[in-house]
Image 1 (cartoon, rainbow, N blue to C red):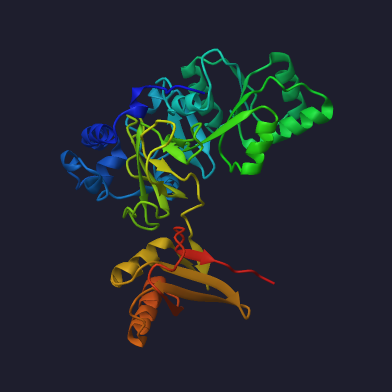
Image 2 (image 1 turned 135 degrees about the horizontal axis):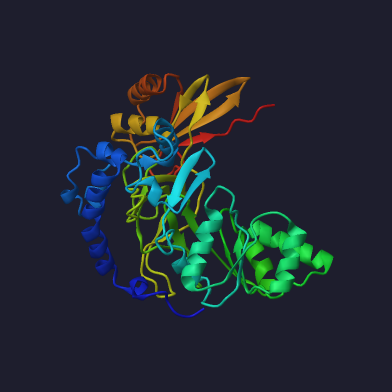
Amino acid sequence: MPGHYDMLETRRREEREAALMQALPGQVAHAKANAPFFAKWFKDIDAATVTSRAALAKLPVLRKSKLGEVQKADPPMGGLIAVPLAKARHIFMSPGPIFEIDTEEPDYFRGARAMHAAGFRAGDVVYNTFSYHLTPAGIMMESALRALGCPVVPGGVGNTELQLDAIAAIRPVGYAGTPSFLKILLEKGTELGKDVSSLKKAFVGAEALPPSLRRMFQDAGISCLQSYGTADVGTIAYESEALEGMIVDEGVIVEIVRPGTGDPVPEGDVGEVVVTTFNRAYPLIRFGTGDMSAVLPGESPCGRTNMRIKGWMGRADQRTKVRGMFVDPEQIAEISRKHPGLGRLRLVIDWVNQADSMVLKAESADTSPALADALGETIRTVCKVGGKIEFAKPGTLPNDGKVIDDIRKYT
């Protein structure tokens, strides 16, 4: 799978960063001027000053969990789009419900670059098993494949035997869909004697791709790579033939922030993926995906020079209920701000003696009873429910981005 999609993938990092930062204030200004929600969200922001990552980090994070309530208050798009709804090509409804759009712009969701990295080329017939029903996944894949010049079989989901008949008759070389459905097709094809040997390339997403499953595909003669994205912002990052992390797409700025805050974490630390897009129709800026990842050091051996992330590492939305009260990462962040000498914090929630138990583990060189008492009082004030304090040596709590660890098991 040699070759790169374009010269943007191999430019110097400094060149890329300068181009992104040059375009950033214009995108912020565009969102303020054309999307009613962002006019209010950024009302105190001077777009002309947002010319660096440090300046970007001062903007509020718009988390995915907030989109539903914003759109519900002003359906269907909540004033988040910068074009009249009549200019949309499709209006999608994802679970939540959360609504998204696309426009006539080619490769609207920016998937062609990722699929090119997976080996898809013009003329490859591709069998697309992502859903075309209400949610955008099917259209996301199709728009990317059409941008590459690939004929698409709109298989959608379900009807496994019928899909096997279509694959045997049409002989597609590529597959787009979830890895689990590709596994089903291969196993069911063997069971029923259906010929699926034409499939040589697979582009998968929406769920985990464990090494054992990738090896199964390889044994069947199928090269399989995956991408990471959301319905809201499109492709965020993708694998290349190097198989060393996921390379951030050229059309976005990615930050990794501490859950519950907008504060970027050091390279290598796990945190929430926050994405800024340059989409003119739906200009999401500092969009908190709710997904966890971490930045990998260095550059990919494949020659692509953009930032790499580890891929999907779980959810940042760790909100839970303790003794009838909701506790969320924002509250843990507030506790941290009130006690700036602490390192990582981790609130562990368990079920002990038929009741909820809450323990705040805190990295601290100071383990005095006075600090423990102060922290205990802060927990009661911020979370409206009390908990115990356990100190840990600095640097010893897990670096997994988790600030609330709910380990309750009910027996």
